[in-house]
Image (cartoon, rainbow, N blue to C red):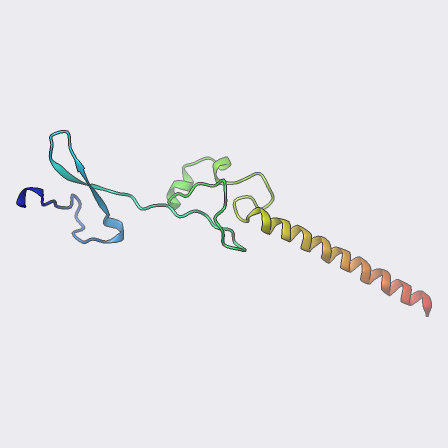
Length: 114
C-alpha cells in the first residue's frame, strides 16, 4: 500500500549498520521511522577475552561521560582484566619469586660443599 511506505529521515539513503531504524506510530496516527543508535560492546578481559562483569556496555564516547567508579572495579587490574586472570597473575608471580629463592638456596648449599 502506498500509505504505509516510509522514507528515511536523515541524508543516508541506504540500509547500513549506522542507519538502522524502527517503525513508530506518532500521536497523530502516522507511521514514521525512528533512528536507532548502535549497541555498545562490553569491555573484554585482555588475557582471556570474556566480558568484564560490573562494567556497562557503552559506545566508546559514552565512557568519557560516566564517572570513574562506573568504569572500573575495586581490584588490581580492575576494568582491564577479569578476576580469574588477576588471580593467575598473582600466583604466577609468587611462584616465580619462590623459584628464585630455591635456586639461590641451592647455589649457596653447593658452594658450601666445595
